[in-house]
Image 1: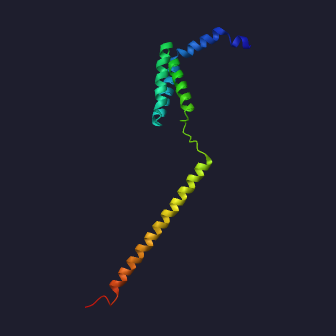
Image 2: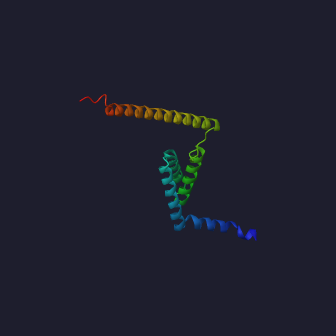
Image 3: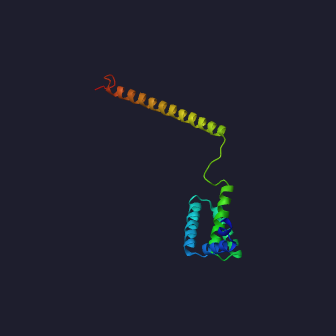
Length: 140
């Protein structure tokens, strides 16, 4: 059964049918455009440049657009993943903890300064209003 299913001629016919099918071409084209837009929106212009360069190089070896677009997408995405531009940040736990503690202490200091400024302003406003209302300052 396996020998009849995977005959060499059948694989050639299937691959030629896929490579020259307009529906497959349009599907790959839509995927390619979506992939390019995702790279541009993330501002990963180096991957876009690799995509264009690999597409240009592939066009010298094959005139089939399905092959050119698939090879370009694969090469650009391998480059993208290899450069670590997949959206994840790699930080050490110690750095993250130290940064969080520093931000926390800065926030506490800012709150204390803000609270001290508010209490100083409230005290000075109360003293001014008391002076105006007192009978000793109102001389007629």
